[in-house]
Image (cartoon, rainbow, N blue to C red):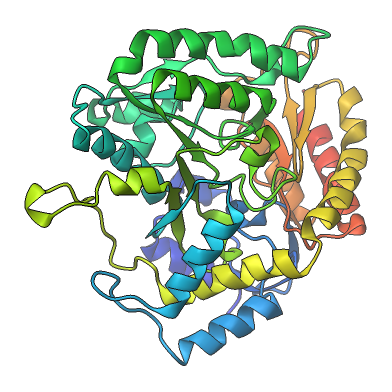
Length: 450
């Protein structure tokens, strides 16, 4: 008989899971999922779980969405994949045209890859190679924000600022310039997000003034540092950063892998600052959570620096076997089509308001330092001491206790350390939001008991 225990036993014999200390599963049961529908997942024992984290932030319009299902099924009978070197196909062209149409201005060309980390690698290499083609060979460094995360391949790790990764893989990583960030969690009492973000920009301005001659690009996650405990900042920081990058002659790379496609309240987070980056990295929600695909959008100006006679050896050097996969492109087109045929952003504003109301009670919890929200992302930061904001020792794994309780109640919450967050698919309803918040409240109550 196929049940949870049977599948889990087979799994642990052969599989090594991501972002996991596998020994935990001696006490923490794996949950094998048999099917999904809307915001719900169902295991092999028939128990359902509300997917409050969009399956690692990828699922926008629910599991087994009928619109995306149909498009992928139709495509599979025509073409599943073809090499994109020297060949092309309609789905890849259609999607590139659509991405150029809907992204901020001056993003004219689209380069495909398979995942978010790969998109970051491409943007870093393109920026470096652009300056090299222009003879600016002294430009070899990148500027990044503290608490940032851009993926886990070596280039992406290097421009991130996660201490555990840096401590572990440091000898393999290139040197970068890390600037204090605009994370509004640390603002003074009574200080607005805007005022704090403006004040913190002084560090970036000084860094660019000193290092621009050797810097290729600044890379940031617009508005929300998702893997960095869902820390948030004001759009004014992006506006000032765009101005400074132009002033000092460096590129701006916007990593919208997690925050793109409606997560922050606008289709792309950069829109809230009315800016356009030199490179825009997209993945996760790009295909609605169906298939691996990423894209890097850049300008004709960048593209033209590589466009030359072959003998001059200026061509961009990067490729993936599954670049521009037809099935993934069609899933992405169907996802964008849902945005364009329905008032998704308008409905998201209603859902975001419902999430804000449901999270109000956490503000007064004696072990919650802050409740913060940007669009369809709500984060609740648990601390040992509310007044001093002294965090719980990480060894206590308080967030794990919330996860375990939530799973027992049929809600998938996957905390980032001691930060509980809601990042559900856009097809969630108000009743499901209440359930999500109720379970999180009870989980925090349990996890903060001494």
